[in-house]
Image (cartoon, rainbow, N blue to C red; front, side, top):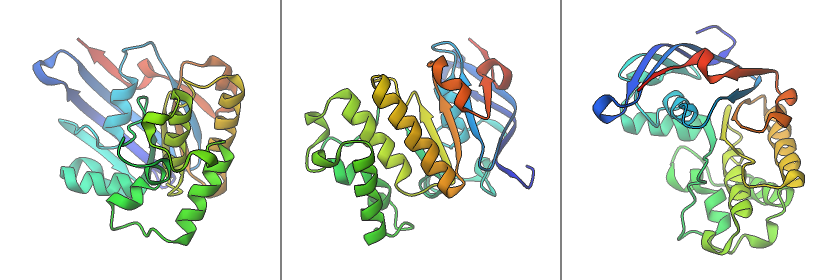
Length: 226
């Protein structure tokens, strides 16, 4: 891992049960503060790559370092704690909790980790992000009362509220119209630039690619056998 790298991986191997999907990541590197897009065909393994790089999935072999910690040496609980402190994630299926209101879904990292301090500043950031994404009037609602696009904006706010060193977004604009897409990407870039966060976005929207520092083809960084 270089001095300027936030995330690096070498010789990583992972297989789903019964070996029907085996992924090899020879080398993967994200520098601090850079903005990277990852593109590839549907079902090629982009989500698997994100989950490996953040410890949602545990590699069978190889080495992954995240923000100075060796992720592949940690057990599940330690990987989860590191992920909450270090990574803001926008999941493709949002991963909102139906029994929590919108505000508590945005503040969820603080509610599940004692390492994060749910103070007035955190609440103010949640409010500001909600206003920036146009959901400030929905904070008392439950996810079941929201449209797909509104849920996606809640997930975006949750990923940014802790001002994490790394923001990973899996198709963050997939359910948004063109105007909302531009606004969501503007917010992602603005918050990441303000705090020097690294941004990795998985997307099928080729219109967005010119905004990134570099574009990765999935096949360049991960080999998949089925």
